[in-house]
Length: 370
Image 1 (spheres, rainbow, N blue to C red):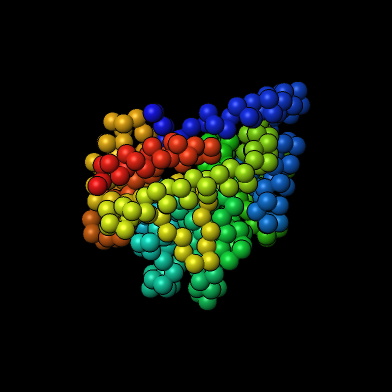
Image 2 (spheres, rainbow, N blue to C red):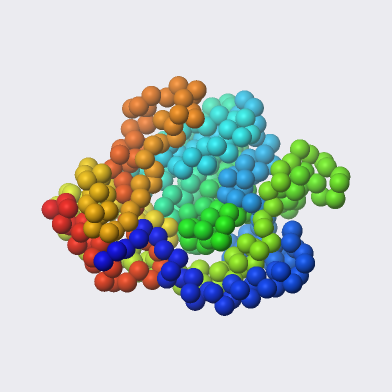
């Protein structure tokens, strides 16, 4: 049985007629930039995420970049970021001229550890960027308490956390300006690149809209040096369509995760596999289902040989990437991030995976590791 790591074949057929109708509406509107589809989606996503404002942009990286820019973070500033995040989080910090300061995650949740956060704060620290990695909400109450105590901005990277909550409050609604991605494989994904920022601050929302559009609010009048990073009108229409399915898809991810957890529990009890763990007061929307084992490479190859897809999220921590050699970090500087990178493996996770498929995956994992 061939089981891909990810597949749109389970969701796209049910969307086909709606998607074609959305394209026809887009095509016939003859308005292809920052039109009603973008405005409608921004209103819908702001309401979904329980924030006052949503500002659509071209991709998740631009959302992070613009959020930092609007908050006035630049040369000489430091931004605290998890040591095991995807590189985009760190790139955004570099784009504004600031310095990323890495802080280790909790080994059980893979998210930023608030208990070691304050030790990283200096007189140059201006912001904290928690990442809701793999779909689990960070411990935002503690993070916000520390940020408020030290007068720091918080920019959430919510690219993997759509509909996740901490103490009942949605991720992407805690920070001052928050960023998300709608890359096609996200829990809420476009059919191309797309991203957005969320905030409750009207001025920052206006500034974000200005930066995304060449630094202009009025055509041909440019107040700041901005970007060309507008959410595509068609992608906004498709995202509005998909919003209607997001809760059902999230429920299905939880079903899949529960079956994985149940069937792989014997391996966990035998100490041969580390399963995802959700921390107290947090929810998990399972953008990814990530396990860990010392036999990671062997397991991935075994799954590949048996027609089962998997991926590593992520094989090289940011501090060891060639692009960041200039920061002077060495192997061993962030051992928790490095351990995760060396042992983690993401198993297939997408809506409508069948119980039979999940059992097949679990059987192969057990066969390799027993």
